[in-house]
Image (cartoon, rainbow, N blue to C red; front, side, top):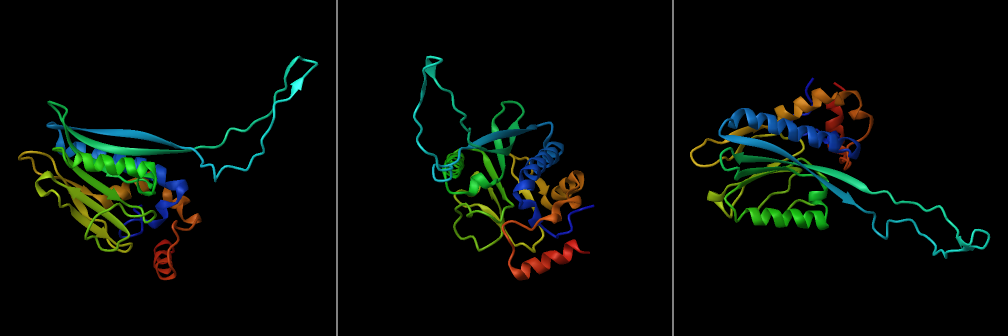
Length: 243
């Protein structure tokens, strides 16, 4: 069955669910686009892996230790040490390329938490975005995360989610869809090149396919949305999952 919400499902942003949804959603985007743009273009799904080490402040306090010598063995004694946990985050990018020369035509980014959190991953992504705006390629950004600071876009009203489409012909302007928690997800255009008509992505239909295939309804609502909803929105959301 489809997701019960008219637009984005706020429960999908839970850390234990998001990465699974993110990868499956990107796969659905790739499949939808491939059926529309073949045989003139090819669609590739690229996976990037980010490994985040714990910061010094977040690491457990430790005491300085001094190597001790074991005279019986005539060598330094061994100790038991601990390897700190690292956070591994996978990020999917969809690329549309010209079939003949493999030139990048359009990049579709489904933003992940690391894209939005202040830090090196966000800075790296913003640099890539700025560089691409000087190329001939188009950029589609799909931000279905309430959490994290919004990527910089001028003249954008306050919103929970956002989709932007950058076309070289409109530079430096981008077409933007500011989306609220209670709004329906839009059908968005995906630019190609030359005289080829835009492809289309029905975001709600793609979300529903992932939701149904993953069986999220069996366990998704055992936890609360993250970030937490305010009281009014929480009551609104609860009405959908108790129907």
